[in-house]
Image (cartoon, rainbow, N blue to C red; front, side):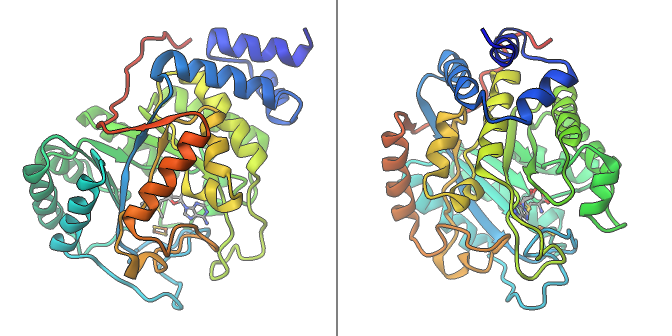
Length: 352
Ligand code: SAM
Ligand code: FES
């Protein structure tokens, strides 16, 4: 057995590696197939071939933040901005429920228009009508008090990528008004309140190095999130990073496999960004160890305006088309979509 194969075997058995071993498998494509096979096996042990779907509702593209990589950042004056009303959001859920979605994800920029009372009103309305569904929020950094209010109103899960666990790198990606410290504190608060919590990062973001990726994996180990979302960084023409190149399919798939082996129980999406850099990116993501897909439920009229990066897929299709297209893709990759909330199967594995 080669040295690299031995490292993959160790990761599969122990769920952890030393820094130099992680660096060795991150920096070569030689063990990508072995990694993907091991990750696929691990996912099958816990989740079988089930793939969970999340109906994504991109309900506002207003944002008070100015992340250098993000197409809906405050200073992108080229973008026409929109907000969905509570009624419009509920109507996306109605369509989604009919299509078999049992998790709705409300994602948006950090938009003060939706204050805590407004958010809680919307959460209550959705949960009252669909008590059998999980509601996930992805609306950025808020106070402990706000998170607690959302949780008490009925929200079940929260997605907040840490983006990078290296504070110097964090500073290269975000303006002074934001800090890694606050991001981490938000994540710890979400966990302690009781949310199923998701974190993650972009692969190939500007200035990223192998050592930062290792820090990312170590931070995730500390946090032990239920959901881990990674996708390639993709350049957007109206951001300060317009001249940087996008992240690669290869490294993203490699990291999905490594993350599956480190966190066997985790809910890991094959992201829209992965599908946007390669036509079969999401299928490859599933084969590399992912077990979640997040089709778009937003009204077609606003989809193009939620432009986080250039050439984002699925911006012209109706929800039903998206659902049908994904169903086929998942099936062709050897898996099946299930109608279920798709909660985490909590840790039957001891992490080292
Ligand atoms: N405002 C919320 C937040 O900050 O968590 C949710 C919306 S934010 C647009 C969701 C995620 O999109 C971010 O966590 C980031 O990783 C990802 N994203 C933003 N710009 C991107 C880009 N250019 N390429 C790939 N992913 C991007
Ligand atoms: Fe706020 Fe991207 S800068 S969502």
